[in-house]
Length: 167
Image 1 (cartoon, one colour):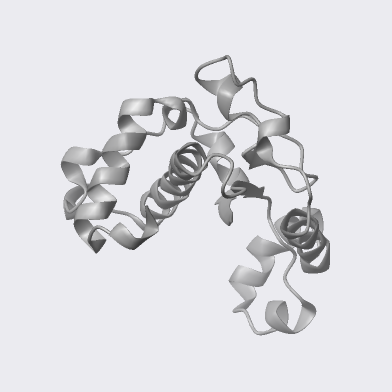
Image 2 (tube, one colour):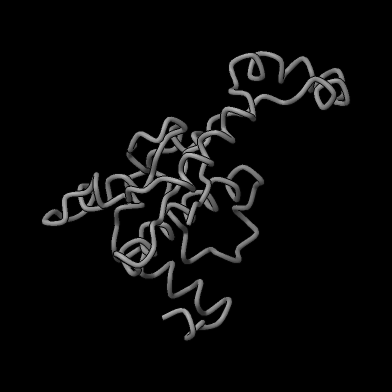
């Protein structure tokens, strides 16, 4: 299973799920919602990997900026084209990211090859969160909080139901 997070989380090392404000519109912004969702994807990948250990290979890719094709850039208003130009020059081509996904989807190893089964916390989860070159990378600190991951799992189950068939 492959989840997708964002390299932009590097700018938010202290981000944490606001469990007491999940439905509170007072702190909402598109950016906050996006990065909280990406953090939740990492946390869910960690939880799923531990729950399905040995039965399912789970990974979460830290996606960098992806280059927009010329037609899409040309369709942007001139202000956005101007603002996006430097980012687009530094971004990786979509085909390159496609190669990352293909390599991950067809790999024969698992995250457990990078993890230390005797360890706890970060070391036990190493190899689940990967960069575009499939190198293990660190997640925001709150992603390693086992209690927060279990709370997110419970909140998610409450929101979507308990898929008893999955376990």
